[in-house]
Amino acid sequence: MYAGALLLAVVVGAAVAYSEGYGGDKGPYLVLGAFLVIAAAVAILLQWRLGALLMCAALPFESAIDFGPMTSGTKALGFLTFSSLALALLTDEKLFERFKRLWQQPLAPAVGAFVLWVAASILWASNKGDAVGTTVSFLGMLGLMVVIGLLEKRYLVLAWAALAFSAALSVPGGYILPVPEGSDMAASGRFGGPGRAAGTGPNSYALNLAIAFFVAYFGVLRRHTMTALLLSPVFLYGIFATASRTGLIALVATPLLALLVPRLAPRLGLRILPVYVLGAAAIVVIVLAIPSVGERTLERYTTLSQYQSEETWNGRWANWQGALKVIDSHRILGVGAGNYAEAALDYSPTVQEHSAAKAAEEEGLAGAAHNTFLGVASQLGLVGLILFLGILFFAFTTAWLIAQTSDLGTGIFLGLMVALIGGMALTWENQKIVFILFGSVLALQLHDSARRALVGRAEGSR
Image (cartoon, rainbow, N blue to C red; front, side):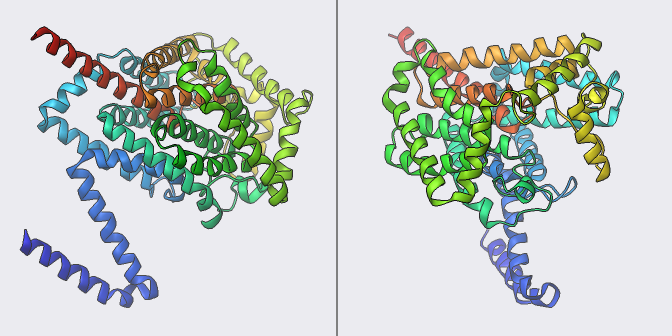
């Protein structure tokens, strides 16, 4: 072991010493970065849980480490984690037993059946390339859910702590890191976090921040009030700076709706009040101290009352009408995963406008249903919608039972509510953080069942 360490030190030292010859002034940094990547890859292969933690921590910076479809840091990290988990399942009997118990929970086979239906839609999709791409994406989401679901509770807490602190760091990171050309931040000035806001825009970035905030504030940091209060303004500023109306609605409505959930209000208690006080203070400070951000944010928020505007409810209704027409023409099977834009081209003026803009940039068709349920029903038909509703039913009922006795469970339940609210205005069924929430529900469910089994055996031995 010592000889190996010495040899590695010699190799690293030699590579750094001669790095300027082939890397210029940046040579030493490139060499050290390469060795750090190699060391992290080896560590992940030896311990898959480290990969799970890094995947959660990397989520807010996803687009900053993705340089293209073939040079994606996120995909490389996922591949290493899945490979490490597969090797661990072959050698660790306890982990394999946990893996079997995970698939005995209703939520896991429900998600598996939904992904299988997504894959089956390739058969009748008109654009099979898009259907295959969407299927591969959902298979990755299924793997992510399994990885998170196999984490023990202490590692699950660490994973969400890593995600929360990384999300908080992404707010200043969005201003420090270069803004890519063509991003929403470059085009409209709306804040979108590092890179292209995980490739999904300011609205999804705002929802990601809201989920991280609620899980941290009501779950991970529930017993660390001061830390939660110090991080809260960062999250709130990030959400407001995106000028996302969907993010604002989710932020305001989630705690209020949670108070109506039976047996959940006592666990929320008076901690809800500081959320609204801090939120109001944050928006006032932003307007007064950063007018360039505050004025744009208030301008977009006030349009929520303009029902006839094409930028608000009337525009969404046009999208939904197009989706309803697609559903009416493909009721049972849908048009195939990833084929909504092509199918809605004849029905939705919005899709036509977006596709025309993309065609001018030679990027193909563009368009979305702007509603998760309509998006699923139009692409996967009535069968797919039933499967997706089954996923939500199992996720919410399980999370509700866990939330009654668990701080982290309370945060996870609120995160699911944010995702559901966001899904009313966005097509959000394929977001990584949603599947992290599903995996978290499974992990907590396995933890509770194992604890009940231990209690039962202890009482039986008396």
